[in-house]
Length: 187
Image (cartoon, rainbow, N blue to C red; front, side, top):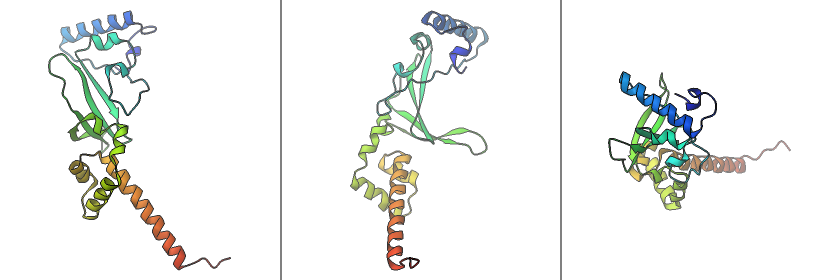
C-alpha cells in the first residue's frame, strides 16, 4: 500500500492509524498473507543514520508493524536497506547496499553489507588526498570502480566521484596544453 492515507478515510490520526493497522493484521492472520505498507521519510539530515522517528506518519503505524525496513538513497543509482524493527529476529548491525538496475526490469542488485556510516553523506570527508591518490593508482592499474570500492571499503559512488573529478581535471589540463601549443590565430 502506498501510502497508508489511501486506505484511510479522512486524515490519518493516531486513532485512525491504530485501527487501520489492527484491521490489516487481522487480514494477514485470517488469509495468511503479508501486507506491506509504505511510509515516506520526513526531510532528514542525510549525514545521520536513519531512525524510526524519520518515518512520516503516526508512531502507531510502526508500533503495530511486525517488521520495519527503511530504504535510504545514497545517490541517484544506489540505496541501502536498514532493518529498524524485527519482532522475530535480532536487528542486524549492518545495512545492505544495493545498486538500482533496470536491465529489462527494475530491480536492486546487491553490492555489499556494510556499516551505515560508510554510506552517509559525511562519509565523503574520508576522501583525503592520500585516499584519492590510492583510488587513482588502482584505477590506473585497471581495477573497476566496484573493485576499488570493495577493496577500500568506500561506496561505489565515492570512488566514481574521485575518478570523474580527476578525469575532468586531466581533460582541462590537456586542453590548456593544446591551446598553448596551437594558439588561435583568428584575432
